[in-house]
Image (tube, rainbow, N blue to C red; front, side, top):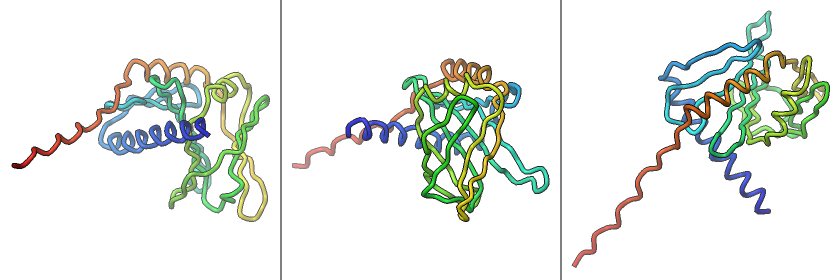
Length: 191
């Protein structure tokens, strides 16, 4: 029970920081580094996780996003946060899975949907990232559609390990704790 509460708190902190980072990042131009099929981004903002690695795949015909994966590292927690974005019209209760030649994730549950798609957002253990880094070839996000059929959305692992190492090194060098607003001073006693 305590482990679930702790994981929820960590995930909430990571997501709250990610939302704040995304809002600040809209105004700040990120430092970008392409590592094969992955893009490493670092934003010039004070954040406990200023960098992520991203891969976004679009349908060549429609130019609409099919799948996007973002992985961030929180040096102070020695943990990763994962965000996977998939199109709408998926079966929310079925969640999704990541599969490679040597690894299959547990079912990952959707956290929210908006007009741009549905999102898996969670803290993941380092073992999942290590499994992805040690896999070879391609990988896929397996989704279930509303009609009950499953669809594999392919993504590349080419450069995953090198992009991850680059992102982690930059995150460690650039991470800053989130400043907490000062606690309100106690009200002066009135005579």
